[in-house]
Length: 77
Image 1 (cartoon, rainbow, N blue to C red):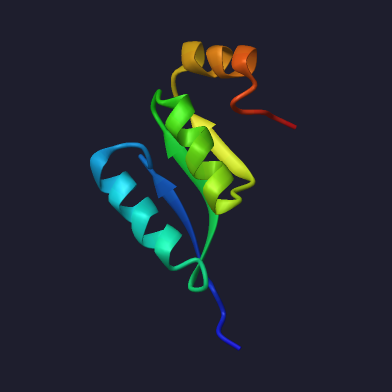
Image 2 (cartoon, rainbow, N blue to C red):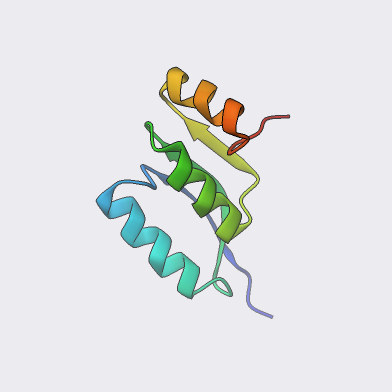
């Protein structure tokens, strides 16, 4: 049995982070994503978290976090 590599992606909604997301998505048997971090694109962050079944997400822009709460895109415990 192969152990998955546990990773977090900082800047997951940017160009490099999105490329990393695509590689991870195609190789879910290799990677376990513990967390995703983005500056302000909460819609894309929420979709990535859902696709990769990520438990922890961080969004830097507080105003975008508030918008995500209004739309139900992201949630917190």
